[in-house]
Length: 74
Image (cartoon, rainbow, N blue to C red; front, top):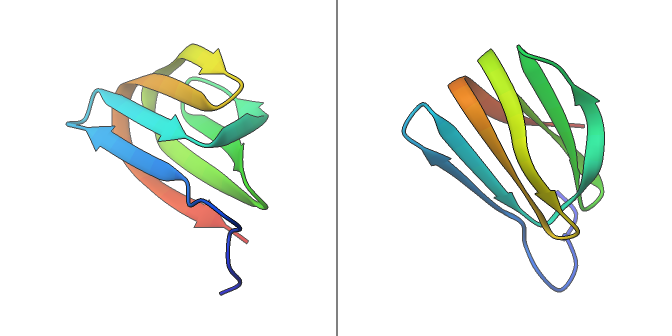
């Protein structure tokens, strides 16, 4: 795995209802069952049910809904 630069993104799953992504650089895809976020040079996939992008800032994102999982896509 190649280094992510000077900082590493932080992903927090807060129970099954919220996910916080620090280091998010944008939205790749957004829907009620899947959210793909650009994090450094990778894409983070969050999936679940009734997902909502509650907050998007230049450095982070907050996703609410029933989160089932998260993974990095190559």
